Length: 151
Image (cartoon, rainbow, N blue to C red; front, side, top):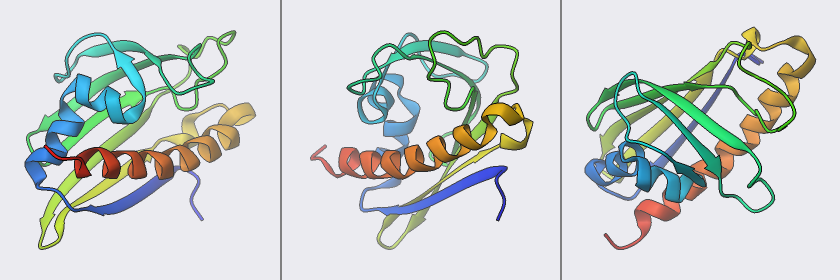
């Protein structure tokens, strides 16, 4: 079993355009992901924000957008499982999060892959991996609920 990458896949019963909007619009993304972001998504953009999940409101959130290919691919980098407000994660390598969309007869297949955990310091690598493994399970359910709402 690899601990360098997490991969999750879900079939969303929603058109690809709706799923893309949920991913590529920072405000919509924040609604289902549970963050309040400052700014808009664009390649190269760094967006700071705060987590809005109950019990995690003290956690800062920041991503740097890598690529955006409309209705196909959205990717960004971040410091995984960076939840300790007393710790400075800026010197650590980031992981890469890639969302890919594919049309199917049932709707849209959404695949998310987060890779690069092997670069995270050994002292917190397993915790970061396990935390994000559970986190991506929850986030796939969250986007499913979000895109399933009436447009």
